[in-house]
Image (cartoon, rainbow, N blue to C red; front, side, top):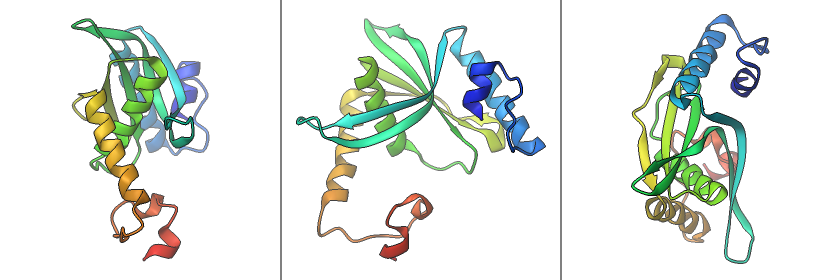
Length: 168
């Protein structure tokens, strides 16, 4: 729904939302317009990570990417926005993965990550992610997932896990 609002200028994209959800998405739409400062905003941006052989090992979709780049000390920086309709959790690992995918897709040197929490009509402070930082975080997760000795551990993200029905 948020992407329809961004594409269509906040017109007729309510879908099946209740009035409260509509207000939250409307807040996010206006917030994204404000932070984009008139720059182009791409929505539902599909991104992937591939290994050296070209085999995809991770994918995701950024809710919004603000282009063109900001230039900071001769380094191109892209802004990614992730809209969360639920609770405020630590999404750093997910955002580091999105940041790395965005750096590859847009050939940017760094990413400014912005998280918007519709339920609270609040944005988390933006943070900058460098390539090395993102790669280290992503590879730590990739190694853990591929570790045959790794034991499952229940957490707040079990509802999103493809192994939820068989690991606990």
